[in-house]
Image 1 (cartoon, rainbow, N blue to C red):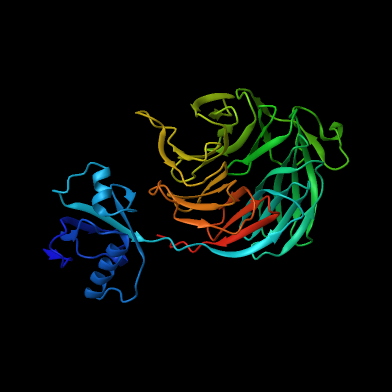
Image 2: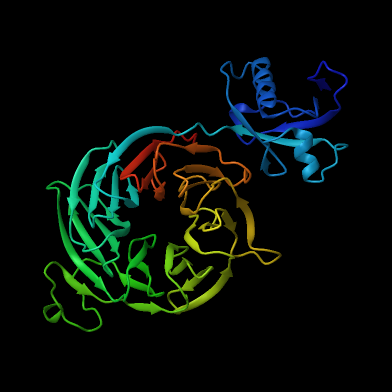
Length: 423
């Protein structure tokens, strides 16, 4: 039995150190440690053990999971809060700590930036001056795209190849526009103007294979559209008879879904045909677009401003007017669907986005000017606060695992480099 403390007055707790990261494995025999031990002491202990076994000489920063939650107080406080007996050997799982994202670039716009979406090396932004912008991930401006007559509230990529890209913008002018971008010539064409909403659009979401998109608006409706840029026969109308606008052809929705009582604020596809929406009416709704109805409804106590479904775990995170972020498991059958509440923003949370490569990590942006990086196993405190914005954060995105992007009412987009250790 190893004893790591020279001070015999402090009560000892027996722990067993375990890890899923093979390169950092140490012997898993029980160790006696002071009950007051904290994360930094445990990290030092693991580094000592790694040096002894000569498996690593460099210092590594570790995080520690006890009862599936990160240790953020002393070990005795942590296990007392969870009613775990100190008589037992406590399993302590450790893993390499996520390094802090580094501020990388600041992209200056002429007005509030309400929407951001990354795809590979490109960043799409939507602005309150009615324009859309394309940037490289290194911060170089490629294109300004006029076309809307009111602020652009959301943007999303539909498809991307080496030479061309298709994307959509949703605006308060009651339309969504599907665009084709010729990357080599750096020119865009408006392919379809999607008309059908009777009030301004707030959100747009594209399904996983880019075949359909959903839009939500202040008219409380959710509408489903084809994203195809070809002149198909839609609703039996031949292409030649189709209404032509000044730019692009008018497209009508395939499906209109009624159910929300106030604005639809966020949209996330949770499967090929399933969509989750958040609304100012204090509810989340899960829709089946094939059957054309609501599968499930989750009631909250304040307006929801955003929702995102993890492509890995299928769990939902939501942004709300009560300053809290909540984690929901819509499949939960016992007890509450709220699995965790994350509380360190001081004002409205406007935007939430999951990591596409790590099932535990997500990012949030709020009216307190902060972007926060979270791990679902640490609900009491964010992993990192990404500071730099000087006004409220209106949108964030983490579609490319290498960088986080956020848009703000300070007229900027900020890029933070994320050095995630891939496990």
